[in-house]
Length: 389
Image (cartoon, rainbow, N blue to C red):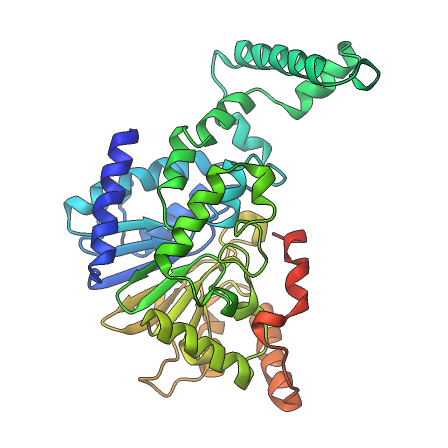
């Protein structure tokens, strides 16, 4: 498995480095453990069939990270993407899966948002034995490293509490997500930023603070920081609220002239027409900003966020969003479609349009106020983002 993953990633890296892309690109945002909804979206976009086999031909699927947490079925989704990563190449297509902040967190043993079902998915007939052995190792470690006055009692009550926080399947989950495990190693072989055709894809966003770094530098910095362990990670690119895994400025800050100029500088730096981001669910549909130069694809796909259902298609430089079972043109430099017109058109295709109505009202309020905006890279609200990952 390890050699196969490395081979596939090498092929994709050469593919991206050459500046080539399939004729059609499909981009899908955060999954968060909802395998069933992810499969439905892949089938709706004609990328897989009822037997989960690749049917996308030369299409390039870009999944923007955040496969785990908040839902129970991440393992199924990861196994499917690993399979599609190989089978798509056989038809001339490609699958690129980016690193999201939650993928990184699972590798770094930051388990704040792991759904109990995630551990259950790894349970086996050996789980009790593995957990018992791990418990003994924990007791030995604490006994050796803590002064006697600070040690736990290690009585039945303490062990019961410990087992509740370390359910069966926990050990296997941690081994699989470790840097040398099946899924941890896969994450470490995935890019944080990828350019496919004339589009840049990144989970959170490239903030102005990172404009001096090349894509290769950013990807290397993330991989290197993940290799240094969790203690170092807290002060590195991995948890930087302005870093590529966490930045929300292009999704949340006002579209001011200053922010627009900053965005244009970044797009020019990397030679792309647009930046596609995830990480921040705003509406249950793909949302364009900055006249289509920013496209947000975190539609809240998972049950945790309300089962949004939408994907982005980029074909011959044109951008479209699938909403329901229809494709809608997105605003861009090549058409006269406004964000308001797009959202009013897709409104009829969603089950509950209330969130779209609120968003449309907020756009009108912003335009009416014309208040000076804080630059995206200086927004102090970013400091709070780690509280709501």
